[in-house]
Length: 275
Image 1 (cartoon, rainbow, N blue to C red):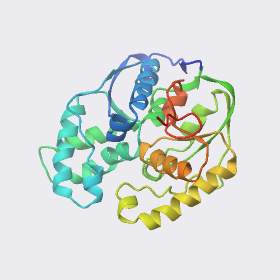
Image 2: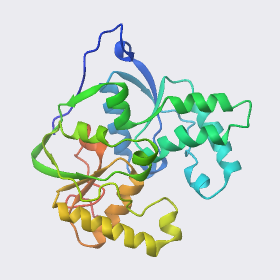
Image 3: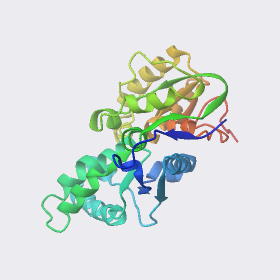
Protein backbone atom coordinates (compact mmCIF):
# COMPACT_ATOMS: atom_id res chain seq x y z
CA UNK A 1 0.00 0.00 0.00
CA UNK A 2 1.38 3.40 -0.96
CA UNK A 3 1.81 5.85 1.89
CA UNK A 4 2.03 9.54 2.63
CA UNK A 5 -0.17 12.52 3.34
CA UNK A 6 -0.21 16.00 1.88
CA UNK A 7 -0.51 19.23 3.84
CA UNK A 8 -2.03 22.29 2.23
CA UNK A 9 0.44 25.10 1.58
CA UNK A 10 -0.42 28.01 3.85
CA UNK A 11 1.05 31.51 3.95
CA UNK A 12 3.70 31.30 6.68
CA UNK A 13 2.46 34.54 8.17
CA UNK A 14 -1.12 33.38 8.49
CA UNK A 15 -1.22 29.93 10.02
CA UNK A 16 -0.01 27.64 12.75
CA UNK A 17 1.51 25.45 10.05
CA UNK A 18 4.40 27.91 9.57
CA UNK A 19 6.57 25.99 12.07
CA UNK A 20 6.89 22.45 13.29
CA UNK A 21 4.84 21.96 16.41
CA UNK A 22 5.42 19.59 19.28
CA UNK A 23 2.78 16.95 19.88
CA UNK A 24 2.47 14.66 22.86
CA UNK A 25 0.88 11.43 21.66
CA UNK A 26 -1.60 9.99 24.14
CA UNK A 27 -1.31 6.35 23.16
CA UNK A 28 -4.34 4.99 25.12
CA UNK A 29 -4.49 1.75 27.10
CA UNK A 30 -6.14 -0.37 24.41
CA UNK A 31 -3.70 0.73 21.72
CA UNK A 32 -0.75 0.06 24.02
CA UNK A 33 -1.94 -3.37 25.13
CA UNK A 34 -3.83 -4.69 22.12
CA UNK A 35 -2.98 -2.76 18.95
CA UNK A 36 0.40 -0.94 19.05
CA UNK A 37 0.34 -0.55 15.26
CA UNK A 38 -2.30 2.15 15.73
CA UNK A 39 0.18 4.15 17.79
CA UNK A 40 2.88 3.75 15.14
CA UNK A 41 0.39 4.76 12.45
CA UNK A 42 -0.56 7.87 14.42
CA UNK A 43 3.10 8.83 14.79
CA UNK A 44 3.67 8.43 11.06
CA UNK A 45 0.66 10.57 10.17
CA UNK A 46 1.59 13.29 12.65
CA UNK A 47 5.21 13.42 11.54
CA UNK A 48 4.17 13.64 7.90
CA UNK A 49 1.87 16.53 8.79
CA UNK A 50 4.90 18.48 10.04
CA UNK A 51 4.95 17.80 13.78
CA UNK A 52 7.61 16.57 16.18
CA UNK A 53 6.19 13.71 18.25
CA UNK A 54 6.94 12.60 21.79
CA UNK A 55 5.36 9.72 23.68
CA UNK A 56 5.83 10.60 27.37
CA UNK A 57 6.86 7.54 29.37
CA UNK A 58 5.03 8.91 32.41
CA UNK A 59 1.61 8.80 30.76
CA UNK A 60 -1.07 6.58 32.22
CA UNK A 61 -4.71 5.76 31.54
CA UNK A 62 -6.82 8.88 31.06
CA UNK A 63 -9.00 7.75 33.96
CA UNK A 64 -12.19 7.23 31.98
CA UNK A 65 -13.04 3.77 33.43
CA UNK A 66 -12.76 5.11 37.00
CA UNK A 67 -14.68 8.25 36.05
CA UNK A 68 -17.56 6.29 34.51
CA UNK A 69 -17.67 4.09 37.60
CA UNK A 70 -18.18 7.17 39.79
CA UNK A 71 -14.71 7.31 41.38
CA UNK A 72 -14.18 11.06 41.01
CA UNK A 73 -11.41 11.43 43.62
CA UNK A 74 -9.33 8.67 42.09
CA UNK A 75 -9.92 10.03 38.59
CA UNK A 76 -8.80 13.49 39.67
CA UNK A 77 -5.50 12.00 40.84
CA UNK A 78 -5.05 10.35 37.44
CA UNK A 79 -5.94 13.62 35.70
CA UNK A 80 -3.21 15.50 37.58
CA UNK A 81 -0.62 12.98 36.43
CA UNK A 82 -1.76 13.23 32.82
CA UNK A 83 -1.75 17.04 32.93
CA UNK A 84 1.80 17.04 34.33
CA UNK A 85 2.97 14.61 31.64
CA UNK A 86 1.49 16.48 28.67
CA UNK A 87 1.23 20.18 29.46
CA UNK A 88 4.63 21.03 27.96
CA UNK A 89 3.59 20.27 24.37
CA UNK A 90 1.95 22.52 21.81
CA UNK A 91 -0.78 19.90 21.34
CA UNK A 92 -1.94 16.57 22.71
CA UNK A 93 -3.34 14.08 20.20
CA UNK A 94 -5.04 10.74 20.84
CA UNK A 95 -6.07 8.08 18.29
CA UNK A 96 -9.24 7.74 20.35
CA UNK A 97 -12.28 9.96 20.62
CA UNK A 98 -13.16 8.72 24.09
CA UNK A 99 -9.76 9.48 25.63
CA UNK A 100 -9.52 12.85 23.89
CA UNK A 101 -13.02 13.72 25.10
CA UNK A 102 -12.15 12.68 28.65
CA UNK A 103 -9.22 15.11 28.74
CA UNK A 104 -10.95 17.86 26.80
CA UNK A 105 -14.35 17.87 28.50
CA UNK A 106 -14.06 16.19 31.89
CA UNK A 107 -10.66 17.17 33.27
CA UNK A 108 -11.57 20.86 33.72
CA UNK A 109 -14.65 19.95 35.78
CA UNK A 110 -12.75 17.36 37.80
CA UNK A 111 -10.07 19.84 38.82
CA UNK A 112 -12.17 23.01 38.89
CA UNK A 113 -12.00 23.31 42.68
CA UNK A 114 -8.25 22.70 42.87
CA UNK A 115 -6.49 26.08 42.68
CA UNK A 116 -3.17 24.46 41.78
CA UNK A 117 -4.53 22.46 38.86
CA UNK A 118 -7.71 24.09 37.51
CA UNK A 119 -6.04 26.46 35.05
CA UNK A 120 -3.57 23.80 33.97
CA UNK A 121 -6.39 21.36 33.22
CA UNK A 122 -8.25 24.00 31.20
CA UNK A 123 -5.15 24.79 29.16
CA UNK A 124 -4.50 21.11 28.43
CA UNK A 125 -8.12 20.57 27.44
CA UNK A 126 -7.97 23.39 24.91
CA UNK A 127 -5.04 21.82 23.05
CA UNK A 128 -6.18 18.19 23.10
CA UNK A 129 -7.54 16.67 19.90
CA UNK A 130 -8.65 13.39 18.37
CA UNK A 131 -6.27 12.29 15.61
CA UNK A 132 -8.32 12.84 12.42
CA UNK A 133 -9.67 16.13 13.73
CA UNK A 134 -6.16 17.35 14.47
CA UNK A 135 -4.90 16.38 11.03
CA UNK A 136 -7.70 18.15 9.16
CA UNK A 137 -8.66 21.03 11.44
CA UNK A 138 -5.28 22.01 12.89
CA UNK A 139 -2.66 20.76 10.44
CA UNK A 140 -4.78 21.29 7.31
CA UNK A 141 -4.10 17.84 5.89
CA UNK A 142 -6.06 17.89 2.67
CA UNK A 143 -5.31 14.61 0.97
CA UNK A 144 -3.32 11.40 1.15
CA UNK A 145 -1.05 9.49 -1.16
CA UNK A 146 -2.13 6.21 0.44
CA UNK A 147 -3.72 3.65 -1.87
CA UNK A 148 -5.00 0.13 -1.41
CA UNK A 149 -3.61 -2.49 -3.81
CA UNK A 150 -7.08 -3.44 -5.09
CA UNK A 151 -10.54 -1.93 -5.18
CA UNK A 152 -11.89 -2.14 -1.61
CA UNK A 153 -15.09 -0.93 0.04
CA UNK A 154 -15.22 0.31 3.61
CA UNK A 155 -17.86 1.41 6.09
CA UNK A 156 -17.19 3.78 8.99
CA UNK A 157 -18.62 3.66 12.52
CA UNK A 158 -19.01 6.94 14.44
CA UNK A 159 -18.16 6.23 18.06
CA UNK A 160 -20.33 7.97 20.63
CA UNK A 161 -17.53 9.98 22.23
CA UNK A 162 -15.92 11.27 19.05
CA UNK A 163 -19.27 12.20 17.53
CA UNK A 164 -21.27 13.51 20.48
CA UNK A 165 -18.56 14.95 22.70
CA UNK A 166 -16.11 16.17 20.06
CA UNK A 167 -18.34 16.72 17.03
CA UNK A 168 -16.02 14.75 14.75
CA UNK A 169 -17.79 13.16 11.76
CA UNK A 170 -16.74 14.71 8.47
CA UNK A 171 -13.00 14.69 9.21
CA UNK A 172 -12.22 10.96 8.94
CA UNK A 173 -14.50 10.62 5.92
CA UNK A 174 -12.76 13.50 4.14
CA UNK A 175 -9.40 11.78 4.59
CA UNK A 176 -10.69 8.34 3.62
CA UNK A 177 -12.22 9.78 0.44
CA UNK A 178 -8.70 10.57 -0.79
CA UNK A 179 -7.36 7.02 -0.49
CA UNK A 180 -6.85 5.32 -3.81
CA UNK A 181 -9.00 2.24 -4.51
CA UNK A 182 -11.16 2.85 -1.43
CA UNK A 183 -14.93 3.27 -1.74
CA UNK A 184 -16.87 4.38 1.35
CA UNK A 185 -20.23 2.68 1.90
CA UNK A 186 -22.30 4.23 4.67
CA UNK A 187 -24.36 2.13 7.07
CA UNK A 188 -28.01 2.97 7.55
CA UNK A 189 -27.22 4.13 11.09
CA UNK A 190 -23.48 4.84 11.41
CA UNK A 191 -24.07 7.05 14.46
CA UNK A 192 -25.82 4.37 16.54
CA UNK A 193 -23.83 3.02 19.51
CA UNK A 194 -22.07 -0.33 19.08
CA UNK A 195 -22.91 -1.41 22.62
CA UNK A 196 -19.39 -1.22 24.06
CA UNK A 197 -19.55 1.73 26.44
CA UNK A 198 -16.48 0.67 28.42
CA UNK A 199 -17.65 -1.16 31.52
CA UNK A 200 -21.24 -1.02 30.22
CA UNK A 201 -20.71 -4.15 28.12
CA UNK A 202 -19.43 -6.00 31.21
CA UNK A 203 -22.17 -4.78 33.57
CA UNK A 204 -25.02 -5.23 31.13
CA UNK A 205 -23.90 -7.96 28.69
CA UNK A 206 -27.39 -8.90 27.52
CA UNK A 207 -28.24 -5.33 26.55
CA UNK A 208 -24.83 -4.83 24.99
CA UNK A 209 -25.25 -7.96 22.88
CA UNK A 210 -28.56 -6.75 21.47
CA UNK A 211 -27.02 -3.39 20.57
CA UNK A 212 -23.88 -4.81 18.93
CA UNK A 213 -25.93 -7.42 17.04
CA UNK A 214 -27.99 -4.63 15.48
CA UNK A 215 -24.76 -2.88 14.60
CA UNK A 216 -23.19 -5.93 12.93
CA UNK A 217 -26.40 -6.45 10.94
CA UNK A 218 -26.08 -2.87 9.70
CA UNK A 219 -22.40 -3.43 8.87
CA UNK A 220 -23.14 -6.64 6.97
CA UNK A 221 -25.88 -4.87 5.04
CA UNK A 222 -23.32 -2.56 3.42
CA UNK A 223 -21.42 -5.57 2.04
CA UNK A 224 -18.24 -3.58 2.73
CA UNK A 225 -14.88 -5.34 2.83
CA UNK A 226 -13.60 -3.16 5.68
CA UNK A 227 -15.02 -1.84 8.95
CA UNK A 228 -13.22 1.28 10.20
CA UNK A 229 -13.53 3.44 13.30
CA UNK A 230 -11.39 5.69 15.49
CA UNK A 231 -11.84 4.02 18.88
CA UNK A 232 -10.28 0.69 19.79
CA UNK A 233 -13.00 -0.18 22.31
CA UNK A 234 -15.71 0.04 19.66
CA UNK A 235 -13.58 -1.80 17.12
CA UNK A 236 -12.80 -4.70 19.47
CA UNK A 237 -16.45 -5.00 20.48
CA UNK A 238 -17.72 -5.05 16.89
CA UNK A 239 -14.86 -7.28 15.75
CA UNK A 240 -15.68 -9.86 18.41
CA UNK A 241 -19.32 -9.99 17.44
CA UNK A 242 -18.58 -10.14 13.71
CA UNK A 243 -16.21 -13.06 14.32
CA UNK A 244 -18.75 -14.95 16.43
CA UNK A 245 -21.36 -14.48 13.72
CA UNK A 246 -18.99 -15.84 11.08
CA UNK A 247 -18.47 -12.63 9.10
CA UNK A 248 -15.21 -12.07 7.23
CA UNK A 249 -15.37 -8.27 7.28
CA UNK A 250 -11.86 -6.94 7.95
CA UNK A 251 -11.74 -4.63 10.99
CA UNK A 252 -9.10 -1.90 11.34
CA UNK A 253 -8.46 1.42 13.04
CA UNK A 254 -8.78 4.34 10.62
CA UNK A 255 -5.20 5.45 11.38
CA UNK A 256 -3.80 2.23 9.93
CA UNK A 257 -5.56 2.80 6.61
CA UNK A 258 -4.60 6.49 6.43
CA UNK A 259 -0.95 5.68 7.18
CA UNK A 260 -0.86 2.82 4.70
CA UNK A 261 0.06 0.37 7.46
CA UNK A 262 -1.99 -2.67 6.51
CA UNK A 263 0.76 -5.28 6.48
CA UNK A 264 -0.17 -6.55 9.94
CA UNK A 265 -3.25 -8.77 10.42
CA UNK A 266 -6.52 -6.90 11.04
CA UNK A 267 -8.25 -6.84 14.41
CA UNK A 268 -10.66 -9.38 12.92
CA UNK A 269 -11.69 -10.55 9.50
CA UNK A 270 -10.47 -12.51 6.53
CA UNK A 271 -6.82 -11.67 7.06
CA UNK A 272 -6.59 -11.99 10.85
CA UNK A 273 -3.97 -14.09 12.54
CA UNK A 274 -5.77 -17.03 14.19
CA UNK A 275 -2.62 -18.77 15.43
